[in-house]
Length: 267
Ligand code: NAP
Image 1: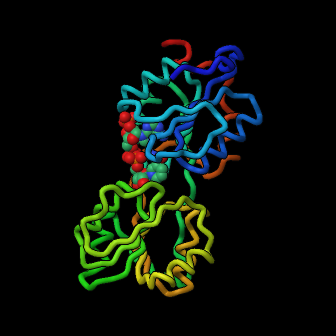
Image 2: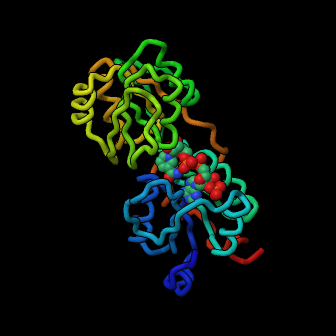
Image 3: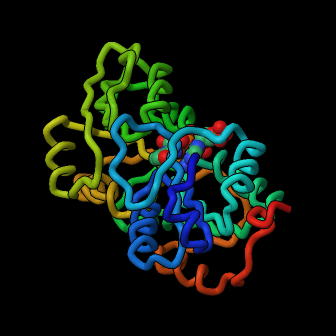
């Protein structure tokens, strides 16, 4: 990625945000408003029409750990913030290793998990295929709130009627006899989720434990309606210093030593 001229001219410390989340977007906006860092943001490129960002943005994989390390060095990045989705564990592992190799300080920004509340009917699953299996052998009416690249797991259980919600269309459609599709991007309000679950007579929800407010409405609505949620647990992520808010990142950045990283010095 070519750094924008303003970054090269100001000599401000350079921060790369690994994004794809609302938190990454908020962080980029907060930092752009302050102007103390030259911020760039990286997206996986999963959605066709990503929301606009306040910072210069690149899109697509780096080419593994080696590619990210090369990027950190070429762009003379001084600090890296991993604000990827809680389920984007591969990217987080790559960030951990590439930052270590390049000597770039790394912080993870990770929203808190949802916690089971009184009245919730949750069954935990370690993986998405396990979650599909936990729906059981009898036909059910399922709201599938998974990534578009994950929903194919439902093909292993064609007895269920699926209502699949994703940002971009699921192509090709699932090879199951009963599936309906909704294209929508959160946030989703609880009242709307309540109406959706009722209108489609949903009796189970497949969800990742993504955390955050934007997609919690379906969990709260499921509680109110007594609907079971098969909740996929988060994958393991590398052990790095982690905060759960944009403010936490801003505080970490203030504590960073005011010298260039080895990646910036070309070491
Ligand atoms: P992943 O499995 O962690 O990453 C796979 C590869 O995608 C990475 O190795 C990297 O490619 C590339 N990548 C991921 N995030 C990137 C970023 N911010 N900038 C540049 N490249 C990036 O992540 P995933 O396949 O995107 O998704 C895994 C899970 O996270 C799914 O459950 C998905 O629904 C959820 N999720 C992801 C995002 C997102 O923005 N990625 C957003 C919402 C939900 P290289 O190895 O080539 O560098």
